[in-house]
Image (cartoon, rainbow, N blue to C red):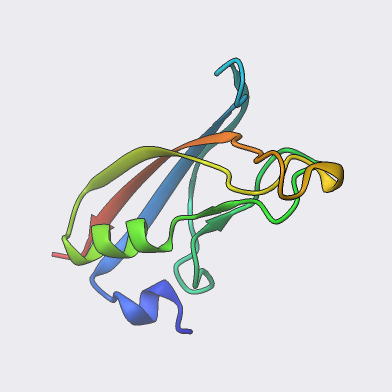
Length: 110
């Protein structure tokens, strides 16, 4: 798989910001400040779940980001829930459902 810079040379920068929310209370549990991604190194958009006991969790943002770039959107934001398992004892019984709120800002070459 190529880097984002190779796949989408029209993109000059991508900035991200993530917020995580408890699945039961919807309270903000962690905020990851906005940062600019290195387009030469990033190939996929996968965010790990912040729940330390979560098994096979995380968030796949590849389709969202790539479609946003293809549509030349300046921003995209949304929410998704982790589909991993709450812990090893609850595999096939209870999903994690920790919520991720994501924000992407795209800048393009003129």
